[in-house]
Length: 81
Image (cartoon, rainbow, N blue to C red; front, side):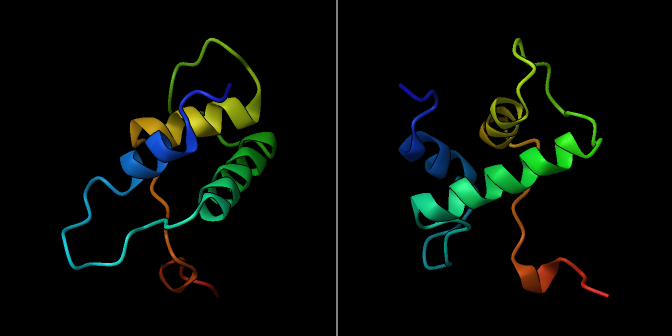
């Protein structure tokens, strides 16, 4: 079983969204993409922002998202050059 669950993870990521605003993530697909992108960043050398018992990049990425240490941004906000 995945811990945290998709629902718990989505609720945590969307916690700061006020009623009437669009949620940061609104599907399992969105949260999986965000976790995979962060895991690739960790593989490429980014430093983890949480202390995690395991050393698997995907597990670290999920933990970072769950603890709110990593912010999910839309492509519009990323500052593409």
